[in-house]
Length: 218
Image (cartoon, rainbow, N blue to C red; front, side, top):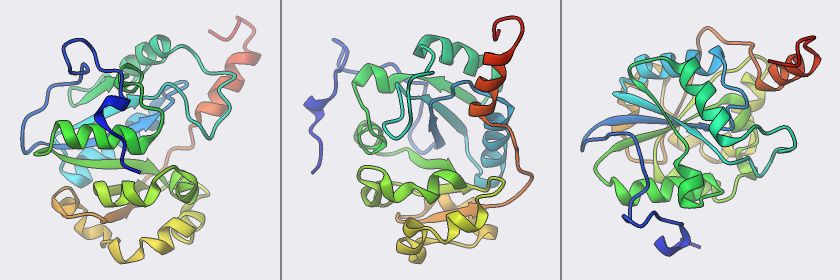
């Protein structure tokens, strides 16, 4: 069911605060808990900027992933602050607008952005581990029809991702990796699987190290 605009908690001005954008821009959307953000997130972003010919990437810091335990989730403000320090890149913007509009699921977030910026070429970016479980996301087929997707390879997930239920279902929309530069301009469903140097960094492992740190995890 298509969510109505009234579903979102919009500010009195009628518009959530978002990074600057202009018609025709190619913007990558990289969502996640960023709990905490790390160099692996920046590595993915720099690869996407280059391989997809993007103008900018937005790190969308989510209020919480419905498919994950939020027991160790730091406050949104803390995660945004850390993400900005880690990103430290002129073409990476960090935003937590999902909390502002009351969106809990990616399908709602992308619907909002498509309605607000119909002339922007958005690309949804996610790791191969997320593609492996993509079929569990609310409205995953609709997400695939909404905008092109770039899947970034991750250690140990290459085969699981490409053989997953969602990858098989969306197989006709997959383009050759060599054609990834054209992805932002393609009509969805369209997606590319990008290989390259892979980061072994994990937010889960970083949280574990913080818990066991002799100085209190900071």
